[in-house]
Image 1 (cartoon, rainbow, N blue to C red):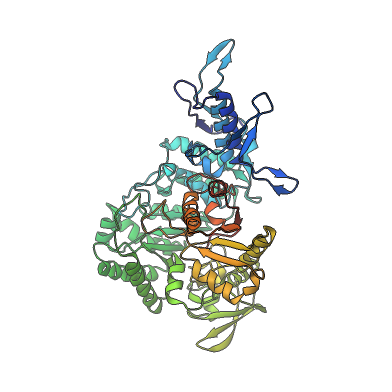
Image 2 (image 1 turned 90 degrees about the vertical axis):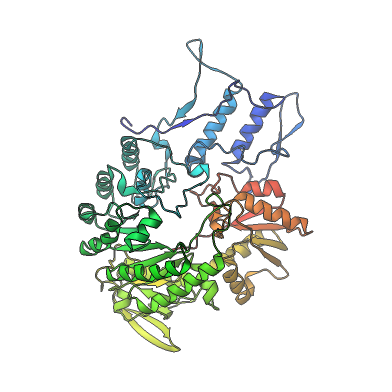
Length: 603
């Protein structure tokens, strides 16, 4: 379409135009096969077929290996942009072109021409079920930041997450183009990208973009911000875009500490912004990274003061992020993770008894594993002030037993039922809870609420749980995978955080494993990111390969390796955060690998 932003991508062409290999034609074909296997799986009938080589139909009929010993495992990944992750067909095109251009030259009117990139011709060809949350479009302009946080995860980050420098007008053109192809009702749109992980409200055209986005959809616009731009004019403008919800990374209500942690030259703006948001009726979450410097004691004291201040400003909830860092941030251990995280958890649990707003911890499973003998319960750790659940009498510590006549077995089930009731705006809905050993019947009206809870921006009618929880139907999917592969000995890989819940559920529900089957649970180390990172969704292909190879060296050989799909959720293409496809695990270990479809376990 005329006036569309031009999506262009570079090509990597050697100076001499040639690729390595004794037979450059065969090498080109091999690379194209490899390239195809990064975006498609061969099938025979309705079954997938694994291939590791090919044979030419001409005179040279020897079998050529697709995966050569000692080969760079990331060779086929073309780091042309974050499109490599979300729309690998663009990388596929780049790899095909590079392979062909190593053998031939393009010409125009009889003269050779040199090319160093390509552009997408018809953007309608790239519209698919990609769009997700409409506010995600704003990440494409979150390319600048006016703070320099000591805990910023972008410091020393991997090259794949680098954000190319562009002018504000170029970024505006791209987002306006994306908006033209965005279909809110169907969730279709142009392929996404990581976008910028920085401050969206700093962009000079942000209000223009927000107004254009609001004109296209009535969905909630959720914006993450460090608060530096939330002065009276900005907050007043944002209030005109309701429904809108802000996640304010405040980190401290002390101007001195916020300045020290974030290098914010005007910390009072962000601190006072919570009162402005309250006065303008904009619901928000207050985020605090509990970074343990200069001392843990000072961090905990400030955490208490900051959470109390946010509560006074009617924050919907306070989110406390346990301090994390990768090896890209620091090769040295920065603090005793178990001790620091444990002390923060104890502090937060005390705060819940003192404040009139919910306080949650991320990652939530660390708290659950540390403090709960029984996992995955539908226990309430807080209720949003003035929400239907608070007005209906729900209290911190209640365990939900029934919702609208349906028995509740676990946390995900409770969350689903409450969200359905909120969307249907159910009136006079019975909810049965267990409170201090007694069973109580409550009556909830989804329409009974006021600020800071709103039916458009809130969730679960105001009930706040310790985390998302583990869906038990994942265990049925596990059993189906095991049976379909006829495995008698399966290795299931998970994370340190999920393992306790998984083991408990399997012990309570042995019928989820076939009779006579042996299941081993393993926890790969987050070697790629390193530091104190233990999230399973941040495991990459090489982490899984390293664990399986060490497992095989112990003389163990499973029939099947099952891996959660969540580390490969980048737009459904089965790729990790380095751009590698999960099938590389099977190719390198020579053990059959299957993905267990599951969601990311977070709020």
